[in-house]
Image (tube, rainbow, N blue to C red; front, side):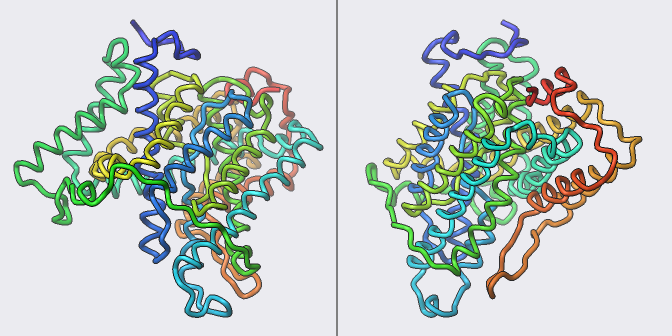
Length: 450
């Protein structure tokens, strides 16, 4: 069987294959999703991995309900709010003087609750004004470079992870390439999962032979498995609210919403369906925002649509949202099985890096495809300026942009800066000849035709 045509109903593959495809999506999101609480724990805030996985799954299912079960998107923990967590961990003024890490986390989550609710405001504007008027501010010359930046911003993490053990990372990458190009039948559809499994077997062999990571640590570490129990409820912590914490966390919603719009464009372009029009950008924003609010209300991180899973869609060519929902169910189940979470958590960082090489590159390639298929004219100085500023902002502000609001620091990510700069330039520079809907074939290729 040649996998040339996309599969939009995974039931045609049979239940066993559907279940395996769900596992593949789970592996794609797992590394990045648990990395957020791991990093936040390093800041000194006790964000829990089980809670993160549970609300990633619940948030994804909630998102699918809000988007009428049409959009094949997975919502994992958002990296955009890491700067806010870091700021909260180091706050030592006013009520935060001598405050325990648990309480600081509760207030940080309160700020994220408000951030999630800001999505509803943008969704209302889109509903009232209309998606066509809003999309006039997001032509291909803006969305294309933004999508490119989404992938390229993730690229350094892929290299960093892979550098822990390059042989292992290259094995994972090679397996994905081989099965994606030369695989037959089901093997061609699950290259990511095969890359994980085969590379993990290689890791077991390498570990048994005494090989270590570049930093001298063991390739595999099973200590967490022994310490973890078989069953356990995800620990929850009710969010608390304070104006200072809201000022730190809530403005980051600007970055997250811009990432959402870019991801919806990327998913739409990948699948070839107009998700921005149907079920509507307002519905996907509501789903993302409420999923974030729900997670934070009970001590979890903000959620966001995941580029890793968009990369899996590109490779597998299986566009059925039911497969994503299976991955969400798996994530919920893992939230109740600490030992299983620990087992999956033993996956070497280098394997995650090898897989990310392919996934992150695919995202940027989609952005390039959007620009090419829409025939963006870069001999036009206006278009060249917009794209140039987006790319420089998106790649240059590696540490984001930090400024003070009410005496507390607020950090915008590079992607948020790029998106804001591109939208503003597109709005104020003369010569905007883009009319949404005037080029249906071009808009359809980028997934947002009217």
